[in-house]
Image (cartoon, rainbow, N blue to C red; front, side):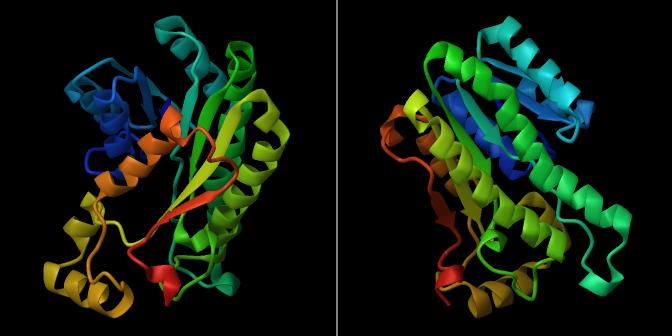
Length: 245
């Protein structure tokens, strides 16, 4: 299952994850709040893919997604927790209660609800792999990080990943987090002129370029597969070296 706010939108990383997994032979359940965009992506994927409208902040919605996945393809043995919401660009003193709570609800609580929803089935089938998508903000709060709730939630994803890994490793449920930074999504292309993007990359990314969503999806597919069978409870960073400076 590739689940999370924005996971099914064309040009977003979640779409790339779903396509990569389907191309590797996985049967994919992908979700989004936007039913039209989500169905469009599912219909365009070569391979087995079904779309389910889904609110990651609602535990009942998670239960519905898992039930549909069971009925369609069987018990899910992979979860890509791609929930993500940046929230407003604002400093702490100006952060409204509503915006703070919404950011935490999507970026942190949604990840917990997802893991809790799939673990019973994974125990039933003898294991599985959970890939939680965090961010380089899960390591440090930089000037271009939108707000403290985003940073807090991305740190929390690291912590939850390690906690669940410690609790369920003996049950063959592997849990890892992926931390992208400087990824060239469709939104970035549409909103930031190329010249400015090049200036940003030159100033802040040692590799002097933005990453492609497919480069993150390669990590996701690796962690979902048996090729990463002894990788557990850790973080994989894809940021072109941003955290090194």
